[in-house]
Length: 198
Image (tube, rainbow, N blue to C red; front, side, top):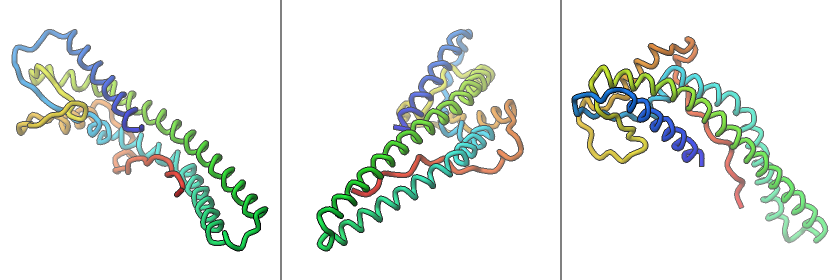
């Protein structure tokens, strides 16, 4: 689901780029370029900083969800191992406890996932809107008639020098410098903990 939200955001940004390009006079050349805008956003200093901030923001919640998952798994194992020795009443009590823990975990996991997606989409849109301007300026200066996003459309062959992802990242960082702490590579923020084993 995260991928669909991200892809939808990127598609909206790409459409905005096409609309902006339509306002400019068409270049006389027929040069075409491709860019992987997802990769470009993630590689900018601002994109790395945003991913790092998201990772730090959601890490405590992710750890809490992992602890809940461990508790659920431990309780499931206990019920299975002691199935033959537990009284019906004790087994029913433990099963109720397990069901309650699973419901709480699912609710918190869904809330955390929704919050993460909203924050991620905000960051992608903020950076993507500025990147569209950089792409438009670059395409006009380089006389490109068309710039395609190969993360959205199937591109089966790209000649050397046609992929403009790296120069766009460099131009974006020049136009939108991130604080020095963003220079270090940040791992991509991970979605919240997975569901407990059945």
